[in-house]
View 1 (tube, rainbow, N blue to C red):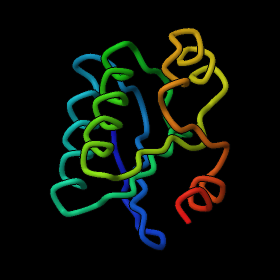
View 2: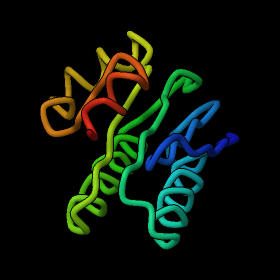
View 3: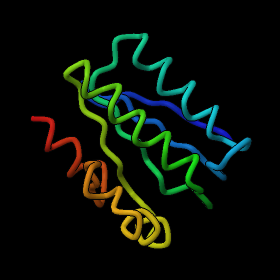
Length: 112
């Protein structure tokens, strides 16, 4: 899995491409989130458009990222979630805990 990073306004956007599952991408995602937090990022958007698969380990990393930023008074938002992934997260009720937006523009607007 590859994760690209870019900045828009006062937000950092991480865009993983590939699988986020145990042993494949979960550690990379955790490290990318930790690196951003350690650099002082407090508004983090995770663009999931390029994610092809996510298991419970990947879902756990989403929750961990949300908790980490919430404790610091920051924001952790999911954007561009593919329908199959949204269905999986909806079935597990994770979407009721996380901020999910259809696109970056909506997520960035929510930060204002």
